[in-house]
Length: 342
Ligand code: NAP
Image (cartoon, rainbow, N blue to C red; front, side, top):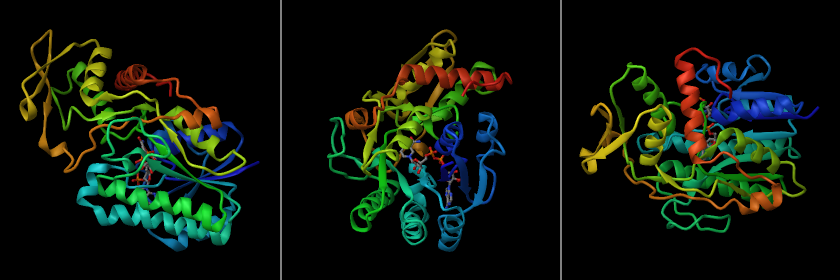
C-alpha cells in the first residue's frame, strides 16, 4: 500500500485528492495546521475519519521533519498555502513565509528524511501575470503581479532546483483556476454561487464583487487532482500546465450562475457604477465594490495543457458552462439540505 502525505488536505484540492487516493487504495496522511476550518469538506465527501491526521504548520520546520520521518511517504502533495491573492497584498510577509519559505522548509526536510519520496508542488497560473493574452504553456515567461504570485514563483523555482540539483523527483503543476462546490467562499466563483442561491431563496438582496472584466481559465478541481496524481506516476519528474484552454470573464460567470438559477441578468452603468439587474423584477442583484479590486490585477489568463494531454493523457471534460451549472446545482441543493453529488 502506497503512502501519501497531503499538506493543506482540508482545503478544496486536498479534500478531493484525499478521496481520490483513498479510492486508489493509498494510505492517506492529511497535514493541516490547528483548527478545523475545512472539516466540512471531508464531511461532504464522506471521508471524515478515513485520512490519518497530522498536525503540521509550514511555518515550523521541526514539525515537518518529525512528520516525514515518522510517515516515510511515497508521495507528497504540497497544497498548504495562503492561497487568496487579495489577502497577499495586505499580508505579504506571512504569504511569503508560508508559500515560499514554507516550501523551502518542506523540500529540505524531504531531502534529509525521505529523498526518494515523489514531491508535487501546487504552482499557479498567477506566475504568468502580465505576459499578454496568448495561451500560456510551460515555456512562457513569468511576470508575477501579486505578493501571492511572487511567493509561488520562489516555490516554483525551488522545486525545479531540488529536481535538478538534488536529483529529487519534484514536479510543479502550473494550475489554472479550478473551482468546485468545495471552493472556499472567499473566492469569486463560490462567493457568487452561494449569493445567487441565497438571492433565489429570498435570503439576500445583492452581491458585491470586484473586477467584472478579469478573464480566467476555469476548470473543475475534481478533475485537476487526477492530473496532479498522474504527474507523480511518470518515469521522470517534470512540470505541467493544467488548464481548459477556454477563457471567460467574471461577468460571464455571474450571468451563467443567475441563468442556472432561472434568473436573467441585465448589465447597466459603467465602472464602479455598473449594476447587474434582474430582468424580470428590475431589482439590483450585483454591485461593484472597490474593496474587492486587487491593487494590480492580471487581465487575462488562459492555459495550453497540450503537454499534460500528450504525456499524462490528462484532459479536462468539464468546461466553463458545465462548471457554473454544477456549482449552482450544488449550492441550491445545500440550501435545501439535499445531499450534494461531489
Ligand atoms: P485552499 O482551499 O485555500 O487550501 C489551502 C490549505 O492550506 C488550507 O487547508 C489551509 O488551512 C492550509 N494552510 C494554510 N496555511 C498553512 C500553514 N501555514 N501550514 C499548513 N497548512 C496551511 O486552496 P486550494 O484551492 O485547495 O488550492 C490548493 C493549492 O493549489 C494552494 O497551494 C493554491 O495556492 C494552489 N492553487 C490553487 C488554484 C485554484 O484555482 N484553486 C490555482 C492555482 C494554484 P486553513 O484552512 O487553516 O487556512
